[in-house]
Image (cartoon, rainbow, N blue to C red; front, side):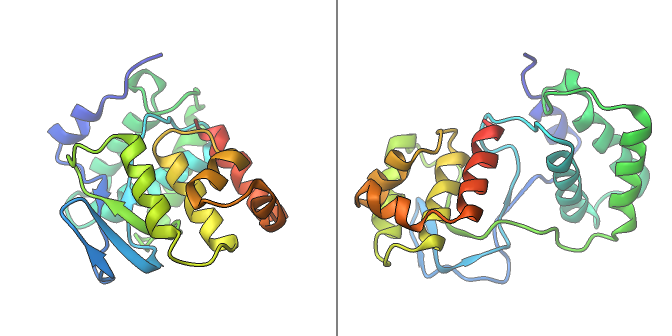
Length: 204
C-alpha cells in the first residue's frame, strides 16, 4: 500500500490542519486545548494513518481542503489538489474513482462556495509535536472527559479520540477510558452511537 504523500501538500503550501479560530479553550496547556462545550472548528486532516475509504469521506476531505484554502488558491489549483488526493497512487485513498465521478464531485465542491463543511464536535485537541504517546493521550482524554457524567455525548467524544489515534473502538476500550463498567456503556449505546462506532472502525 502506497505511503501518503503529505510532502506534496506541504511543498504546494496547502493548508490541511487548522485549530479553532473563534472558539476559545476552557483549559490550555503546552500539550492540549480542552473545550468543555466542544468545538466544531477543528479541522485536522490526515492526522492518523487511517486512509479515505469511501466516496462520502473523499468529498468531505475535498470540502475541507477547499474551505481552508479558498483565500490562497484559485479554483484551477484546487482542482489539481483534489485530483492529487483522489489518485490512489498518492496514498490518500484506498480505491480507484472513475474520472466522470471525480469531476462531478469536484464540481459539487466548487458549487458549494467554501461554506464551513459539516464537522465533528471536538473537546480535546492535542498540539503538534507534544511527544506524547498514544497511551498518554488516551490517559489525558480519560481524565478530562471523566469530569462530566457519562452520557451519549461523552461516549461519542471518546470514540472520536480512539479513532483519531488509530485505535479500534470497543465497548471495553470506551469503558476503560471513562473508568466505568461495560454495562454502563451498553446502556447508553443507542442506534446512532452503534452506527458511528461501525463507521469509525471501518475507517481504520
